[in-house]
Image (cartoon, rainbow, N blue to C red; front, side):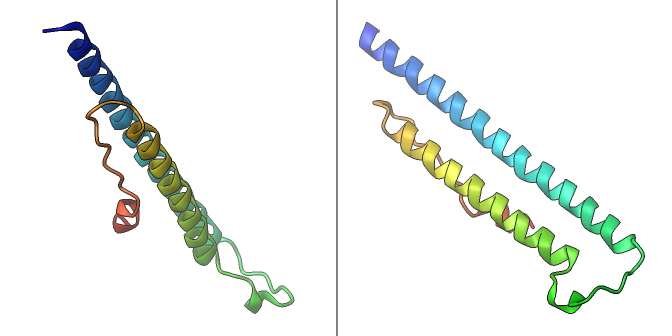
Length: 107
């Protein structure tokens, strides 16, 4: 095996490992945020009800949590796209798999 082939294979392996690790990290980020928001919504739902002016115009804790999780998922999708573009610029054979909307399906 020649040296350029070994270098390419090592870069491929390093890039694949980095992409896999990054995917696991982003999946963990979404999972942690989902758990925190679920617990916050459950806690808010158990709090005593207080009459506030214009309270009917405010979003519920569940709606706020859903909006926040949508934001987190958009940021994670953008991060995955960015990673795919960076790895795609490497002179290797690694083709990262972007899971941009896979996290929404997990809801």
